[in-house]
Structure formats: structure tokens, C-alpha cells
Image (cartoon, rainbow, N blue to C red; front, side):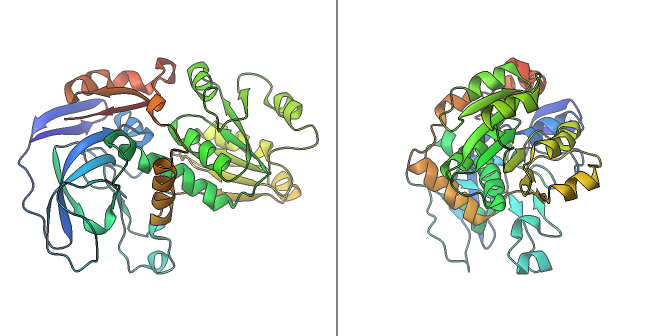
Length: 340
């Protein structure tokens, strides 16, 4: 079967590998119908992804078709031919975090395409309890569920309430997802970026009420929109250390800062100012079954139109050729995916 392997930074290879064996107990065998390209894949390609080793089969934003089912002791409603997505976080189920419900932050968590081989291959076996089927979502929508779930989880972590003002810093796909779910939660949404193509696309999104050009004076632009204060919730989805440390300055007194992205380094901030504002800082990692269910319900209800997001859907050969270009936001790629 066709398989794409990241041998080392900047070296993707399309090769042929044996298909997997029949599914084991509590597993499904699945045909990979779509693979979304996410920031994690781009960071791994460039050698900047934490907790990553080479070689690796990338890919965790997947639309899948059920080919076969192993014997299962887990209740499920999957059948051969169903289309589904995968919650790609393999947790142990027994550690303290899992026992307390933080399955997305399991102490030994492994993510497909990061800590273990992912879905950039024609056929894959996966645990049945990680699959979410939909009778109505198409392959492209299913391939975007995991991406939206990251932003959905960040918004749920923030406990934002109707009428609050949210600032989303960084409107790549993850930031856009956070903006949409902040909007669905009833917030007024402001988006900030330094990329003209990203700002231009964000301008087309009904979930975003106002835009701020990060190349200008951010505080003056915020003051024009919020004369008496600052955003009560700030989501930083940039994965940039400089941006994350700067985002402390945008949070209202008594407000919250949510780090959706991460980078390889230390975050520092001025402690007296942090205390003066009585700010709350959150990390947001991955997503939970609840987030996947919420995202799929929103997509099925057509609360989000994902079709304009998909700016590329290539063959594996074309994907490998163009992948290096997608590292630059100036190329205008909002969401790329490919199909075998």
C-alpha cells in the first residue's frame, strides 16, 4: 500500500509498505479517504515539533471508511462501510489523569502521527473506541473534525460566557476554529494576525466581528474596539514564543489567557503585572470525546461552512512536492489535504 514517511526533517518519502493484518480485538481496519495537513505536520517537517522522533508516518486529521471490524468487548454502532473520523490521542486509561477524566492529558499519551505512526497510508488499524462516525458529514468535513476539536476544547477550557469579548491571536486553522466556537458560545470575537492572507480569509468568516493587524499598534486598535478595557479571554494559537509572551498584555483585569499552541522553549512574564491583573493562565491540550461530539454536531447542523477552508486537495505525489511551500503563510493555504 502507498505510505508516506517523514524520514528526517525536510525529507518526505512516498513508498510501498505491507498492509496491516486483520483487525485485532477491539480494533477496526479502515481505508484512509482524506488526510488533513495540520501545524503539527508542518512543525515536524521543519524539525520544530516537541516530543517527536524520526522516522514517522505523519497524519492524524483523518476521514476513514470502515473495512473490517475485529471482535469487540466495547459497545459500538460501527458497521463496514461507515465513514468516520478518529480521536487520535491514545491514552492508557489507568493513570491519575485518565482516572480524573483528563484523557487528553494522559501521562503516557501518544498521538497518532507524532508519538506513533499515523494515517498517511492507505489502510490503518485503529481502536474502535477512538472512532466517531457520522451518517451525514462528508469526507472533507470528517477530516476537519479533529482540527476544530482543538479550538472547541480551548473555548470550553476558558468557560467563556455570552457577552464576553474574546481575542484570538493567530488565525491559522486552529485559531479560526477557536474563533468559531467562541462565537457559538456567544462571545464577541476579535482576531489578530500579522499575515495579510490570513487576515483576508478571516474577514470572510461570519464568526469574527473585528480584525486587528498585528503589524500595527495592537493596543490602539483594541482601545478603538473596547474603549473601557481589554478582552476578557485571549486565545493564543500562534505557537510562537514571542507572541505567547506578548499576549499577557492583551488580557483584561480578572481575565483569562489560553495557550492553544505550544513551542519548544520557556514562557516568561512579569509576575507583578500578572498578579496585578489577577489573570488566569490555561494550557489547552488536544481534545476530549465531548469536544468531538460538539464539533460534529455543529458541522452536522451547518453552523460552520468548511468548504471555503479547503484550499488544496492533492494526490500524495503533489502533496510531497508542495509541502515545503506550506510552511509560509504568505502562500495563502488555509487548509490542505490529500487523498490516495
